[in-house]
Length: 154
Image (cartoon, rainbow, N blue to C red; front, side, top):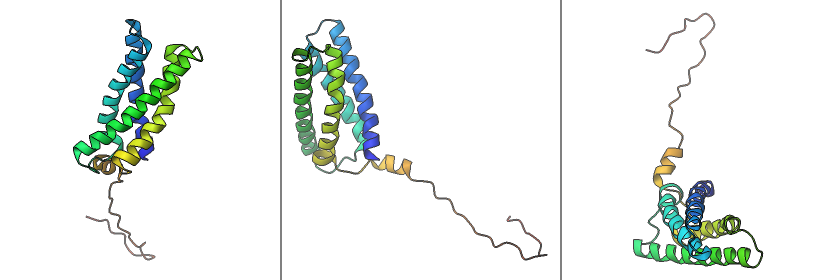
């Protein structure tokens, strides 16, 4: 279930990443600079959405959590930048296509890094409560005996 929620988080972050990348390229920001900047914006979005939808905070003290999160992010940034650079300059792919191809690869690292090194495997309490089915009290009533009148509950 947690990975499903992280896919939503990742999908929304993807739109921030690609949207910012396309916007920056439209104003002729260099490819790698645009890629790093859009990745940073997507990372901020990802963190906020992650702690709302996918991961329960509090496994570590806040500053430790942030250091671990930034470590995962920096590794992800390095992987993202390396992939975009290879796709563009070695495989001659269009910059936007290269960025789009890099995202799902980095998504796997981001999820695993966040789950194993930063947050853990619990989803936020609010989401757990929302997913929990409502408690419905059922009263079982024995069928009436043949010929006995049926009473309705008042």
